[in-house]
Length: 142
Image 1: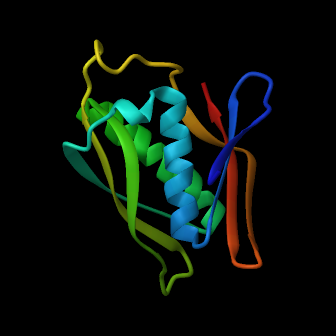
Image 2: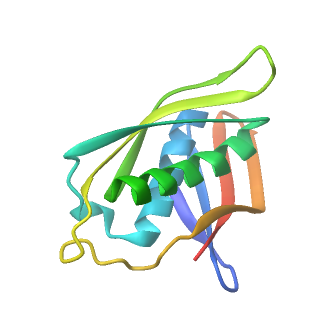
């Protein structure tokens, strides 16, 4: 499975993996969104662009998850999937992410909230690149 959940006392830990860092980010977004809703019930009828930047890959992961939560709330969407357009290291040394999240307008009758995710946190934050497998993990505050 490209993502798993980690044991945590009060919140939810997520671990995502992929053959590329982009794939690991996409799986991490899916893991977080699936904490909130059954993402298999969400149709990809609408999309929203996201952009964020950070000093390193793990921090970028947290920033990306929080940007998704922000867009979901402001746009009143139920989101199910992220497609990364690019993750690029800039001349300044900072990393920048551009992507698109897909979902549909929030409908309380259709999209029952399983657990509200308030934010992605730096707790348990970890990034590994071992033998071509990228692994990211963090804790989301519920």
